[in-house]
Image (cartoon, rainbow, N blue to C red; front, top):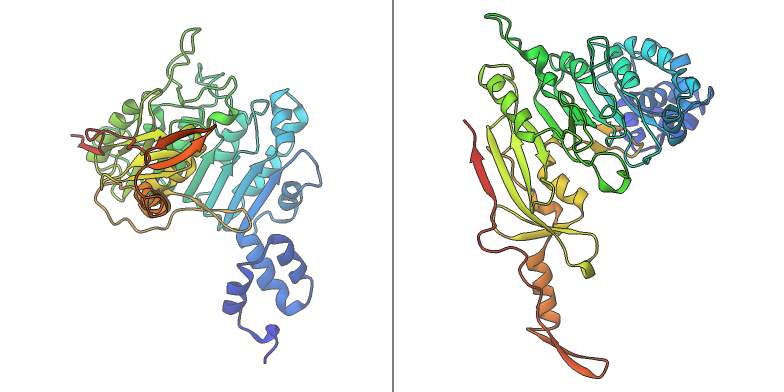
Length: 410
């Protein structure tokens, strides 16, 4: 059998793709033959842990990789210590921003950039808008995939832009719409200025290369504790009585005329996901198809755990966690995560005219009931505290009127 050093680079790349970053670095030091392919694989999809430490991964990366043409994807992962430093106003927390921005702007092949906190922070953390704005403005023209998920812990909602000199993240994202192919957003504050760069100027209509986009207008409830549960509107001032939440239809109605005017000639999906507070449905608005779909959803019985039940287009009921249901609804625009933690933009082909629930990602309640009936047909009789109790099979969660509703907007 030939040694691994005799394999072509194409096979080595396929093998190395399954290795963790630490293993790739060790492999690059074994011999001269494996150094370059292992190093190229390591740098292709980079995960940068952002800490205040001058010897942290991010600090070492920016020192040695300015102008590196091997870097194609970066996930910036702010750590709790850094975010807490921003929260209390430590100047040292901002020390890496200048060198990071300089390095990002010098990467000629960088195509995918992600800031994703992914549940590693709490209410004592903040990633300030000025830091995000500077990083977004530093991205090179080669970036075509952008994910910005701060879980609402960015503080924009507390300090909304009030002057032209104040950094406005919506304006910065709007500039990138002209070059992006894929976009995913979940930030604390947003407004219709996100489409500012696509507004017609006289007879000229700017166009975007955007193909797939998603905006989530709610945040996970676990870490709220003082932070708003929904995305706020930058154009509305916060009052004692109201946080000034962004009305989903406002964003949707602003994007539809742009779509009709030809601002999104390549668009396949542009999903705006929202769940009205206190309402038993999830609304999925798709700018690409001018449709709004309502999915009935309810929390399962207390004894069933922290899961939810959703009704699909086939009128069957499916259950899973909140994240499972979100993925099943937004599967066409869903960003996945590689084994090394890097974020991968969606690549699933668009098959349906309008967005549809991918039921294969969820558990069917019909199968649950069938399995239960096979084990205990019909009602069950058992003794509790010496009393015979008849417990019927699980009841339906939705009435016959609660079905998936698809409305086509004009």
